[in-house]
Image (cartoon, rainbow, N blue to C red; front, side, top):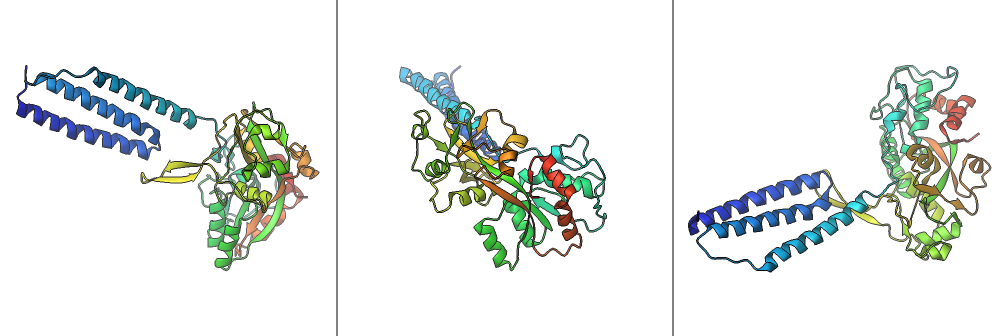
Amino acid sequence: MKFSYAANKFLSLLINIVLVILIGFFVLITLINGKGQYIPLIVTGGATVYMLLKYLLIRLSDREYHPSKFFFVGLVVLWIVVGGKLAYDTYHENMDRVNAEVDLEQYEPNTPGTKAVSLEQKATLQLPKDNLLRLDGATALYPLYSAFVQSTYPKKVYKVYDPTVRSTKTDQAYKNLIDGTADIIFVAGPSDAQLKHAKNKGVTLNMTPIGREAFVFFVHANNSIEGLTSDQIRSIYSGKVVNWKEVGGKNDKIRAFQRSADSGSQTAFEKFMGDHKLMEAPSQDVVSGMGGVINEVAEYKNYKNAIGYTFRFFSTEMVKNENIRLLKVDGIFPDKESIRSESYPITAEFYAITAGTTNPHAQAFIDWILSVEGQELVEKTGYVPIK
């Protein structure tokens, strides 16, 4: 059966419209789901279908057409290029990670099987059900203040998104405290930006140290490096040292990952770096909720030549990634004993912070945290008590 010229043109136009709609639809779905690496595959697939249908229409028309062998060779080459790019992107996308996205529901207070620790006896402080303190804080400290809640709050399940006991991460927790939507937050010390925000709002941050923790650096488990000096780490992150062989490792370029600005880890890291100028952090394009693409600091990916940083408890207890290894710093391994003795060089206090709350239970709660019972929960959770 042969199509007339007019029928051929109509079918060709119809195919164009349908393919454009379908390609646009699948590209949109891909963007919404944060899978932008598949867009070249979708476009190439659409182009391939278009060319094959176009070839078929010409064969069914009354026109003579003998496609060049380069037509089919071109299709094969195109698929090889796109397939190779997709394989490359998929490899990097699926690389092992150490990030802040931890399932906090497993630490929710009073849930069956919760990982939040408890006292063996009833706590001496029992808060009434009315006017409960609104708590917020860092991801890494949620297991700790969840344990505080489990011991002192009325017995019920407090979901991680409950405004009474939640974890919105360090930066947002500071904002919530300063804006008055949280009474106490549990975090590392504030960044310069967070201090400025408090000052602009006329808010004073009242910081009570409640425990100590180690700031740690880690590498791929197969990296031959066992430890670095503080100066070597600063040289790596200021861009002066770029190859592992310069610090006793293999001849391989160093991938030095950082964390997002104003996160607890990044603030601690910047304090460690002092006056040393930071190199530009690796970045990645991330699809926003409306389908737009924003550029942000790349999360750690466990390449064999990578180095990253976080807090000890988060990496060893919450993430528990066997494919990374903590480094000694200045010859000292970060564990509870080296934190307690302060022999590990990068230790820091973490805090219960208020900002003018009018809740009458705030001071009693903080005093209890500093008591023998509260400090016992700090120890049992996995941190080092302040007392």
